[in-house]
Amino acid sequence: MLPDEELGAGVVTRLLSAVRGGDRDALDRLIPIVYEELRGIARRHLNREYGERTLHATALVHEAYLKLVGSENIAAVDRAHFLAMMSRAMRQVLIDAARRRNAAKRGGGWLRATLSAGQDAIELPLDDLIALDAALEKLEPRQRQIVECRYFGGMEELEIAALLGVSDRTVRREWVKARAWLYRELYGGSPEPGSAE
Image (cartoon, rainbow, N blue to C red; front, side, top):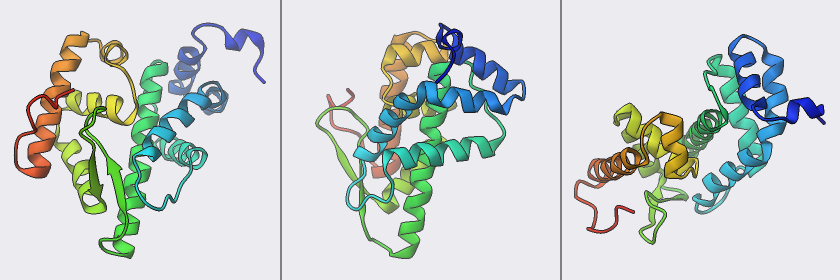
């Protein structure tokens, strides 16, 4: 349990500042504060997985933590930024697991993925999930961040706008552009009208 003063406003920001300053113990104090939020993000990632699950939410949080700690580059400045970084690390863990499964048995297992929160869910085979990851890396950096925050992190437009320092209208516009570009990159056509959620 953390002392009362560490639970006050801004504790995550202070701990992240300490982490950026080289205090690795600060990261160990930070994780329990945001742990339930991280498990929620992990559950959202795993809910998109179709077929046999190889990880559970707790394991995914721990794997992402290890991936992030191993990167030696934790530049998050606040809670939203840190959660977005952890969400990206979770996505990378799942992509790595998908690649391993795909290499082990070509065409086996499917992962559920969607580029909208609406009814237009798209089920992706492992090869397509890997292609989605490759396509995300080609997106403009801000559009990639928006997709990662919204789709993988479950963040709302206002949260993303605050994180990126732009208006929610900019986030909405970039989200629509990114979705359309990803659809063309993956499927070679245009998304159905009205599916830009």
